[in-house]
Image (cartoon, rainbow, N blue to C red; front, side, top):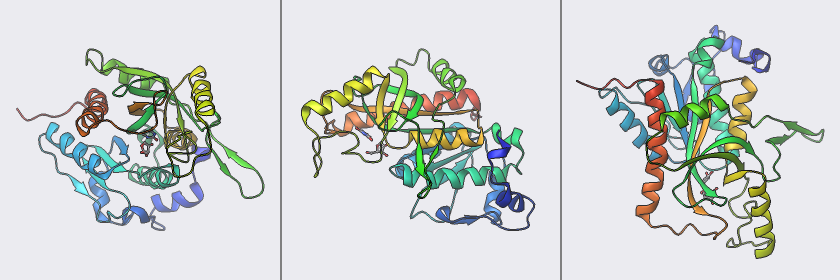
Amino acid sequence: MKSENMNHEFLDGVIDGTHEDVYYHYGVSSADPILDKLRGIRAVIMAGSGGRIKEFAQRWSEANGGAEIVAFPKEDRFITRYTAGVLFCSHGMGMPSASIAVQEMMRMVCFLKHGDPGAMDEVFWARVGTSGGVGLPGGTIVVSSEGLMADLKPYRLLQGGRGTYWFDGTFPASTREAILRANEGSGISIVTGKTVATNEFFLEQFRLDGAIRLETLQTKREFLQWLHENDVRNIEMEGAMLAAYLNFWGFSSFAMICTVLLNRLEGDQVASTAEQLHKFSEDSGVVLFNYLTSLLPARRLP
Ligand code: R2B
Ligand code: URA
């Protein structure tokens, strides 16, 4: 962990009880007794949709002998479920939304682990999501090697009028390889490669089917070709920020597992049937659970 990058000015007082931390978007605070149930946290799993989070938690609880599922009271922003060492949490769509979820989760993990860097670094983080494939058919799973913005540079934020904050968007190779190993023989098509995270579903992804259209078929093809030549395999909307923030604190175990909904070289509209979409998203869940089970062996009932 990179202690020098943590906000000790604020967090040290939370850990020693001098003041509370209010995780506003989750409706809980560090003084809330509900957090005592989460002290054994070993993984934070994020997904865009709240429905997905509830399904994941249910599945993980069943795999762990029906372990208790704890829900945070506030659900109008993010849906959260904790069970058997894993905190499942939705993050909405796009980096502005997901960055709130990630920052509050990082603070919460720090509090839950009493600021102990060794214990914090035992926590595995993942986003399981959907994406557009760059030369890959629907149903392929991409485990990201790096998260970049649409200009193929890492995640950045504006520092007022003074310049730009730059971050590191790489995903740890050891976690990626462990996920692949845990899924050997699964029959699921899994590739690794760079992922572009955009600030917009239509314009920054060079779609031609938005209300606003700023590109041509030719420039869209050139963009996607450029991404492909630079080893980008899929496009989504959160990965560059997720890797950036987790790297900033120095977590060593995190990943992004995204299913491909369509091959962007062939079109823009997500036109798969509900059944196909269900199967695609099931597969990314299977990839995650195969790894989670290897990491935290499930305690099945006899
Ligand atoms: C993938 O899918 C969502 C947009 O449909 C977005 O959250 C993402 O990254
Ligand atoms: N999510 C995205 O951000 N883009 C796609 O093309 C599909 C899912």
